[in-house]
Length: 390
Image 1 (cartoon, rainbow, N blue to C red):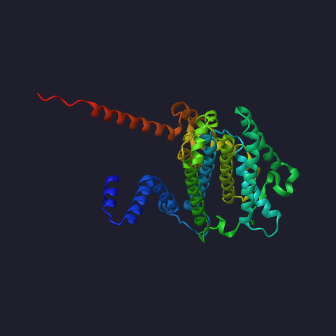
Image 2 (image 1 turned 90 degrees about the horizontal axis):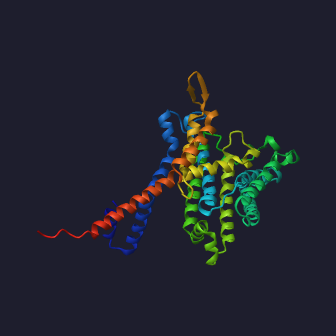
Image 3 (image 1 turned 120 degrees about the vertical axis):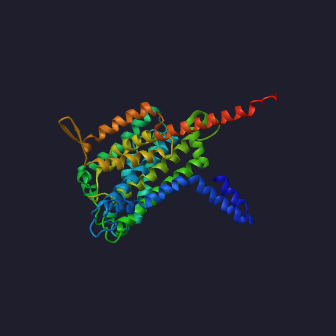
């Protein structure tokens, strides 16, 4: 197919037009699978509506299409969080147990600022949250990146847990709402409120979320292909060698930590907008939002771009689909929702034992080995002397 496309393009006489056509063809041929997935996700609400005979934009927020718009949007945001964690863990070799700090800080800073400062807009508050995440990333990075091994991991955990405890504390109840959380229903802009369905607000918000997910995916891919990203990969493989040839490894790791923190911050803001009760709770800062992306990264494939996305979407959508199902073993009946954490644990053990590189990592390794074997077979055929004439 590629040969046919490029043969047709080479027949174009205008050099400028031919270069444009070659660029577009290369873009489509190299990313056709991503483009197909994007189109499917864009049409996802209509596909569900067609299969379930429900409306995409009903007057009341009921029906399968409306429900799965919310589930898919939240799954895409969890996938974005997992990609940001994979940027640290998989591509930079930074094992952090404090990633939930940046995730929760996005929602808290945005809406605390809006509730405490009269007349401030949502978008200005978002900028304040991003700046706060950059500051937290710099502080955490400057302090923790000088540590090594388990000391670094435990310090990031303690740093994040400190803010989790402060958010739950009754001392700041007037600001954070303590354990009850901060009600934000009246603070959400109408254009970004996914609750109404009759006017298409939820569908529009779903598309905004999908676009955000795509931007995160492309931004991380571009970052990894940039000079800074190449240095980060070298640091992950051998930090001492990278330092020996002149790279300031601390600075590169700090840049990556800030970038991942900003992505987590924006993801947290959007996830709060999709919350059912429209409250920001201390759970956003809990260890769950660090362990969850860590597990999804390990299951999908550490250091792969698509791995965390596949595992996040698969497991999040699977949980939503099976949460009301029951499992019958003999005379005992169990709710799938109650056993989901057990299932995740078993799946993690199986993946580690059977697929040590994760789902996508194992596939990439098998495909690379297959290409090498094909190349070796082709070279052997070329080196084989021709049969002598009888």
